[in-house]
Image 1: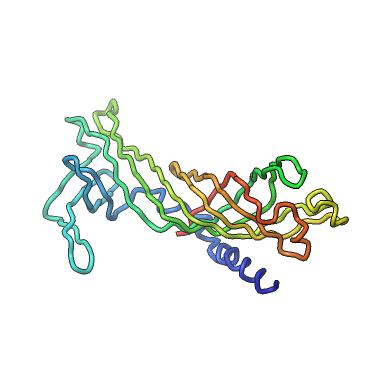
Image 2 (image 1 turned 135 degrees about the vertical axis):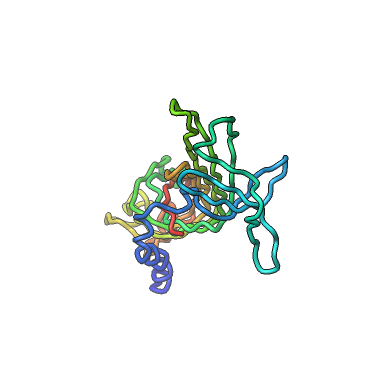
Length: 238
């Protein structure tokens, strides 16, 4: 039993060690220099994007044996705030990456079980989430009265993966089918799958999970191994 608790605490220890990462704005929310995929002439291709304060340059990429390399001698696209003489189309850049998040689920919907009606629980919990993520950056240019093209970027992120962590839950006669007379907050191990959507720096998603009570009353707990659906919020760690 002690080994199980130690294994469950491990993800939360990682989150605490990475505390600085939780407080800073995620780089995935920002459109920065790097490799992206963009559609040219009806076909998506790998490009390298150089983002400056007033302009965006898009270079083609040559495939090398070790890694891709931008061809700086050619420019596929040039976007500038001074380029107001012609309309600039909306451009979409995308990239895929591994997603590592600290996830919390403040609302859990539990299905009816063992004579207990449906529940909407709000208990303290935290998990480490790992998944595959796709980020899209929509580049807009709007004309201003000063005859400049003002740049705006909308970020959209989509991710799906697995989570595991700890939380607490109410243990009482109702949730233990009158097998436990005392009332206390039990420690649970939560795990499951989640889908996350990010819009700019706001991140939320839905989770499908299962909980295990980590004490000797787990055999009486009505929700042991029972599924729940929850509303989750995440903070990106990588």
